[in-house]
Image (cartoon, rainbow, N blue to C red; front, side, top):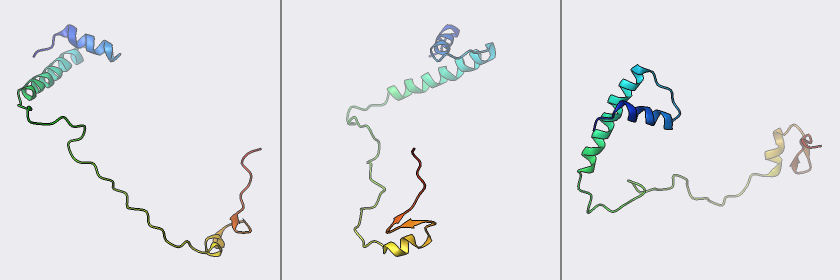
Length: 95
């Protein structure tokens, strides 16, 4: 399917893109080539193929959470610049 110059300009207007004459010619050829490829794909028999949102099954890449004992508070706060009891002491960020 060969796209006309007017069709390419219409697509460019929809995309809000200004094209030079050279770009119009180039995009006309490239878009026409894309449409020809889609015409070939439309000829593929997909009657036995169920509609899907994903071509491959999704799986979580995150590991399962495991409950483990925490480190002692003194070890965690050992390198804290300032501490107050068992907490980090930070400067106030809100007035």
